[in-house]
Image (tube, rainbow, N blue to C red; front, side, top):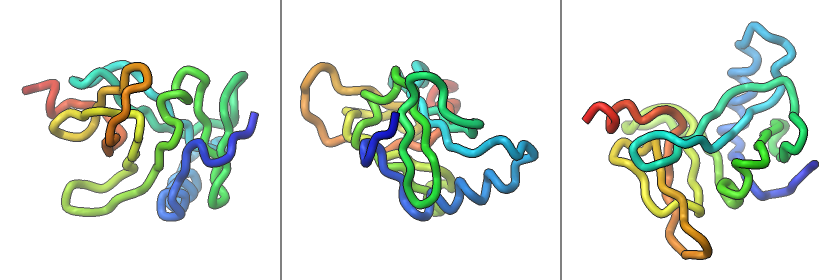
Length: 136
């Protein structure tokens, strides 16, 4: 199933995905998988990794020459999200700006989702675990 613009990826992030895929030892890896998982101090966190292709029910978003795969559970929580790659004082890595979140933890790696139809500003979170907040 193919969906247009439910999730966007910047050209910079797409360039990094291609660069990282080229550096992998597995030539079958061809796409970035983005998922929402339970965990972190705010309730949810993002999981990013490489995959060989879509699984049954996955949404496939193609932009800037990169395939982004999202499982059916995660897609409703990621509609409207933007994936970028940042290189700055606060760290280097993939960053997700998601309009479906209402708050995030202090270190920016986990987030809380909106309940129901409640409106909110959305937050930005980096992909990864919440080891900084979890150890506090």
